[in-house]
Length: 87
Image (tube, rainbow, N blue to C red; front, side, top):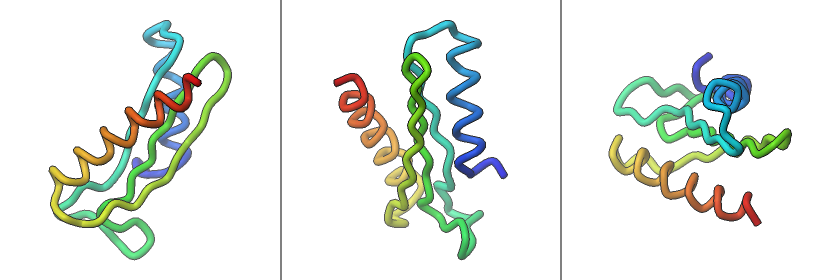
């Protein structure tokens, strides 16, 4: 499915090929208000990072406090991950 480790991996891996960039970030998730299930609840987010040939995929489940809350926290988390990934 679109919200999976495999999808996030494919997105970030292909993004560096398309953009010729040194680092790439992909985010896929369920921000709601609908679309969640027991297996994939609203708030589930995968963030992928790639630098050179190193790829890391992170899984998070943010509290369901609305679509904007989940989106904002996914972006905040991805920026923190980029900084730590660069160190």
